[in-house]
Structure formats: structure tokens, C-alpha cells
Length: 112
Length: 111
Image (cartoon, rainbow over all chains, first blue to last red; front, side, top):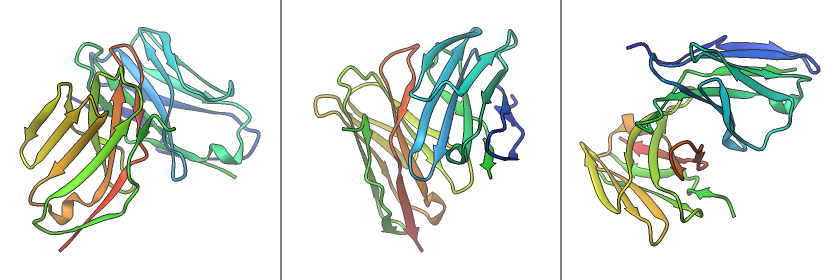
């Protein structure tokens, strides 16, 4: 069974731009969660989507948004990028009934 | 107080020794507990999970949970240099709720 995939793997943007990241979950998984990982803050929860609905949300500003499509693929958007948005963005998928979460390889975003 | 706390390390142990990694959590209603391993430059991978008080063993790994003390630990027996990584503790209150991760403990197994 294929794992969680994320595209692109690396991205360089400048301040003020916006970016869209994509995540394809494991087949059959309906939940997709997004995390931001930085050396200083660790792994911070952004939001979770389940059956195209945002089910949970972390403490991030409204510049961070996401959505999920009917095939469970999810996208995350960050508008008006700031230097502090440079991070590894990870998505993780799970079958809601088994409670086990599997991570994708991540997208490394650098904001210049 | 952070929701999930871990010693940042680095924790250094000699090859063949037992590595003990600890995690405390603040939400007494937490029901599910997970340990992930993350190698440098890679994404976290699930090692094991535990739901009930007591010990759960999987190969060289043993997770221990004490809900009364709000404490979960991971023991790695016969530690190998390949176990050198950051270990993340994660906690979840219930189905349908998000995971909360600790900051991770960096483990170094010395040959």
C-alpha cells in the first residue's frame, strides 16, 4: 500500500507571497492532519480534515488555511508569507477507527 | 505548562544498554499515547502506541503508561547506534480529536 505523499518536497518563496502544499493520504484514510515543525517550536498542529470538513484547528493565524477534497487529498495554503513560516510542513493521515497516524515525507518551505 | 513535556536531551547511552525516554502530559482525560521516532531530515514514524495502564512490549521496545501519574515512557533494550534519533511522545484525548506532540528527546547511542 502506498504511503502518504506530499508535493512539492522543497519550496523557496519570498515574503508576501502565498504557497499551496498538497498531501495525498494512504488509500482508505479519511483523516488528514497538517503540522508545522521548526527547531524552536517542535511539531505544532495546524488543522485536521475529515470527510472534507475541518474537524480540529490549532492556534495558527488565519493566513494558514486548508481544504480536503472528496478523494481525501488535502491542500494547505499559506498567504502573505513571513520569514517565520520557514519550516517543515508535515501531513499525516489516519483511518479514524484505528487511531494510528502516518506521516508523509514533508515539504520544506523556505521564506526569504 | 506545556501539554506534553519531554526532556530535550541529548540522552546518550552506550550500545547494548537500555535507553529510557520519559513523557508527561497535563490533560488527565487523555486516552491514547504514541511514540514516534524521527531521524534527522526525515518525517516521524510510529514506533508503538498504548491505551491501557501498564506495559506493552514490541520487540526491543516497551511502552509504559501510568495514567494516575500522567506519565508515559519508552524503554529501548539493547540499544543500537541505528536507534539514534529524536523520539516524540504524542497524546490524544479521544477519537476525532487532534494529537498533541511533545518537543522530543534526542537519543544518541554510542558505539
